[in-house]
Amino acid sequence: MAVPPFVLLLLLVGCATTVTSDQEPFVGVNIGTDLSDMPHPTQVVALLKAQNIRHIRLYNTDRGMLVALANTGIQVIVSVPNEQLLGIGQSNSTAANWVSQNVIAHYPATNITGISVGSEVLTALPNAAPVLVNALKFIHSALVASNLDRQIKVSTPLSSSVILDSFPPSQAFFNKSLNPVLVPMLNFFQSTGSYLMLNVYPYYDYMQSNGVIPLDYALFKPLPSNKEAVDANTLLHYSNVFDATVDAAYFAMAFLNFTNIPVVVTETGWPSKGDSNEPDATLDNANTYNSNLIKHVLNKTGTPKHPGIAVSTYIYELYNEDTKAGPLSEKNWGLFDASGSPIYILHLTGSGSVLANDTTNQTYCTAKDGADPKMLQAALDWACGIGKVDCSPLLQGESCYEPDTVAAHATYAFDTYYHQMGKAPGSCDFKGVAAITTTDPSHGSCIFSGSLGRNATSVNVTAPSMNSTTSGSPALKYYTSTSCFLLWMKVLVWSALFL
Image (tube, rainbow, N blue to C red; front, side):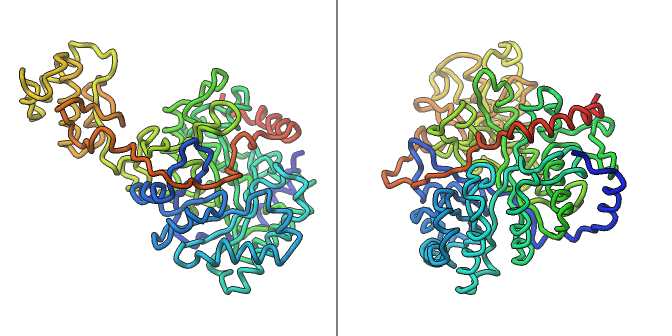
């Protein structure tokens, strides 16, 4: 259902937005716990510190995790699981007890800054929708009683599928059947100075578009101006799905006369592996999406509707969750495996140390499998000559002579040069015959630069793991048939701009 152009013009002129950013933009991570070997909370916190992750979202209030986070300064959003929502939404005292046990008992040592009341309740648990606003208010009242309402904000994540007709963004509006809940909810956010939590999954937008949405547009890849999508009502240019979805949320709120509620993206990401029918769930695409996302948020670009006002974002997710149900992609949204080793090394040169995936110094430069032996030999000769690598350990009888192959010797020389150059961008290329890996190539007495020992990343601490019953599931992000139809009917028209 399209809004008449003249109504849109009146709306756009009459609803000057006043969204502001109260703090520097940040990129945080969600921490799900559906792992067969969930790291101990102290290991989780050590990884967060090593990666300079200062903002996290938990899907529960696990006591061990909240204790481990104490005195770290890491800002934490805790969650009321969906299965507890009905009880809290029907009883002020139940909500007060929940806040007392799960928030007040840990604050301020643990820097809790937000409470997520449920997750995608309107689409995942519609029977609880009638009590959702009450649950928000009851939780907030308990914070007010403890004088914590200014320090800790209360909100609830929404699936982007509640926004209909979202292309172009200026015509977006919320599913009107949800307005009896959404209007009082937005009133609550506005009156308490809170924000709209939105889960944004360009991966699923792309997968469901049947080729209408270009992959580059979903992955934040640079587009020439003639390939950007133009909102005909505002003449704003969109170069990625993420910004278009966030602006659709802003326009949908403006349609209901709410123009000063910020958006925080509580979940977004891209899977690194999928089943045969998920060909775009790849390491390269996951790396590209998350790397571009981080740079986009931290450079304060903002969105076309709100340039310069960055949208702080939580990546889904810290760990691959190998016990998650569903397709293979469901298990592979993580940045790290259970041992803390990165799934891939993010492309973040010049973007600071946040989530560099490389702070443990356990990345290496190795010869690519199947590389041309002549190219490898030429690169090896260069590294041991002009590159000033000490290749004496490769001499016969020395520690790294065996195995006596060009590939093995090149790997030693490449890795030594890579570390001599401080792992600078481009220092592991050697005309395309080298690649960065997280697998330590050390063997026997041949220890490579940066190695912490063969088992350094596999420390296992036997202790109770976190008990999580509801971590966010991208499987729940699939649109309903009605909203999907409306969305893609509009996209089919809009897609002509890409052709």
